[in-house]
View 1 (cartoon, rainbow, N blue to C red):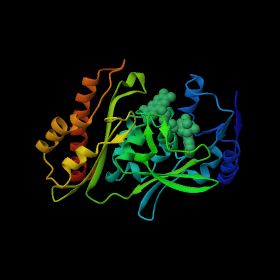
View 2: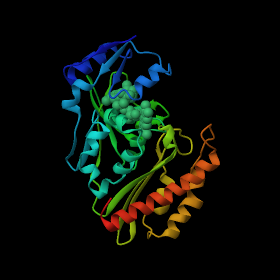
View 3: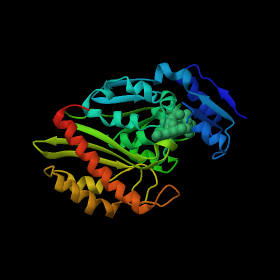
View 4: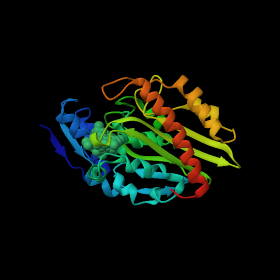
Length: 294
Ligand SMILES: Cc1cc2nc3c(=O)[nH]c(=O)nc-3n(C[C@H](O)[C@H](O)[C@H](O)COP(=O)(O)OP(=O)(O)OC[C@H]3O[C@@H](n4cnc5c(N)ncnc54)[C@H](O)[C@@H]3O)c2cc1C
């Protein structure tokens, strides 16, 4: 059993956290947390801090100071009703939405919950890495910004102190001539686990790769979403071509990709599918940039 605290304001929530941490777990959509508690994968906390009363303050998608800002309690459904699903520069959001759990889950699950979950199955976290996003954490002691790449340290290991809440996730507005994609190979009938996922951001200028960011559900040495910087460095500044992407996938990626075998599938199959995802994802970005449609 646990107690449920329903704060009136963000300040109230932070005060409750500062007095009761580490006996409190913030509850957003509950689609990850309640399952973990039910399955006894974590110790049942003394209190759950219900974030739903903060929706007025923390649910938004907006452009401000050259940044796209997404409030932590914004649900995936709410995101799907914004420009992130109509502007080609954010096309990966549409891909991720289409491959995420079930429609019912997408109504409850929040962006904040997805990045804090911090597993290789955190699809929006993987996508946001391809946008080089930053997490804003807040506590009664103040605010701090943490690059998402440093926020997710490893599977379920997050740089978030017990008295902190995630307030928002932000990233720079991508330039014209850019787009993104998200590729997920999974077993739809089983809903949750992806065999592999990859997120790709590409900006082109006169055929040359002006910017590229690549994230996978895991890379070498990390069992959680992470960037594939070595493949990015290989591609950056070069003229985009199918041959180049083929080389990146077949020769560069395997050096920096470590895959695991589990009861879903083998490491070899995962590596092969990572190569496919890289090729498919980058070609999709290019087609989107050229056609200007998602
Ligand atoms: C059937 C099913 C299918 C799923 N499919 C997918 C899928 O396809 N892709 C995928 O990525 N995930 C999937 N998930 C996992 C889950 O839905 C996501 O991780 C979701 O985004 C979690 O968000 P939430 O709002 O429900 O978080 P919650 O469950 O409420 O919280 C998750 C964690 O984040 C913490 N937390 C939440 N908000 C904050 C905050 N603002 N500040 C600090 N801490 C916070 C909680 O304390 C908890 O530790 C699935 C889950 C289920 C049950």
